[in-house]
Amino acid sequence: MLQARDCTSPASPYAAEPVKNKSWKKLKTMVHWSPFVVSFKKRYPWVQLAGHAGNFKAGDYGKILKKYCECEHQCLESLMKDSLLRPYVPGYYGVVDKDGDSYNQMDDLLSEFDSPSIMDCKMGVRTYLEEELTKAREKPKLRKDMYEKMIAVDPNAPTQEEHEQKAVLKPRYMQWRETLSSTATLGFRIEGIRKADGSCSTSFKKTRLKEEVMEALKDFVDSNRNILRNYLTRLKELRAALEGSEFFNTHEVVGSSLLFVHDKSELAKVWMIDFGKTVLLPDHGTLNHRVPWVEGNREDGYLWGMDNLINIISQMIEE
Ligand SMILES: O=P(O)(O)O[C@H]1[C@H](O)[C@@H](OP(=O)(O)O)[C@H](OP(=O)(O)O)[C@@H](OP(=O)(O)O)[C@H]1O
Ligand SMILES: Nc1ncnc2c1ncn2[C@@H]1O[C@H](COP(=O)(O)OP(=O)(O)O)[C@@H](O)[C@H]1O
Image (tube, helix red, strand yellow):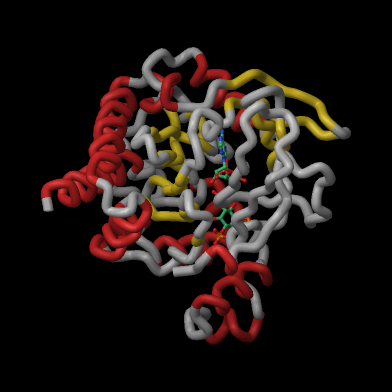
């Protein structure tokens, strides 16, 4: 597991000067935090565990700004009207313009915690939209960056042809990531963890087996069963809310994460985040979220992943 020294910094919503990142460039290997909290009474480092670099800035008190995405804006607006799911997503406060860019303003989920430990779990069996598959067939776009990311993990993963092209197609890369991790077999994967002691890791790309996931979760909560119990209660409540939610039943939820946050008071909560690839189904369609995906049915395996996550945590509590 990577230690804090392996995690690069800074670039934070609270940094006095934005770091000159190639914005939109992926951040995956970075966990950044900064002590430059300007708009908060209580000073705490803000952590971005995954996602696109340069995507976040500080918002009003207790709020953050995430680079505007129309899809996410629409979802968050609908979610604010979904009484069942609203408690499980960051409160949304509309679009804000800052320094020439537009942002979605939402609650900072870390603000109620004292030195929080954080985990990002990407939900579902599929991490790309069906339309990305169609696009890749109609207009194949070779991705050198994804080839580079692939060989960094496993130099033998690309095919002969991919080696020659030094590039791969996006769905191929995404599927490879799904089968390498627990996405394909458990319906969720750990993307990153930052613990209260400052240690952080995004090295879960090969965390695939149930036992490996359990090991990572155990380390995340420092073997504290009370915290696990609190997470379990929250996850079960969230699952019940999802099953009854109009929004959830009518949307394909892809690439969305559960953000786990706890602190030493044993307060432990989970929220749904990242709705950049969550889309309303056409023609009043609905999804079951548990049946296997076959191209065309748009199933995402979200609830199947949730069931597995709940079972794993239950087993950890019993053991
Ligand atoms: O995690 P790694 O292996 O770095 O791969 C990333 C993630 O899957 C991103 O999903 P997420 O944003 O949910 O983390 C995805 O962004 P999209 O959401 O745009 O599909 C990136 O696609 P590109 O942005 O096309 O590079 C892809 O390169
Ligand atoms: N509302 C929030 N409150 C606190 N942290 C957040 C919030 N939204 C996102 N984050 C942090 O930022 C990371 C990336 O968020 P995400 O929405 O997945 O970005 P992207 O769309 O760039 O993938 C998460 O793993 C989490 O650490």
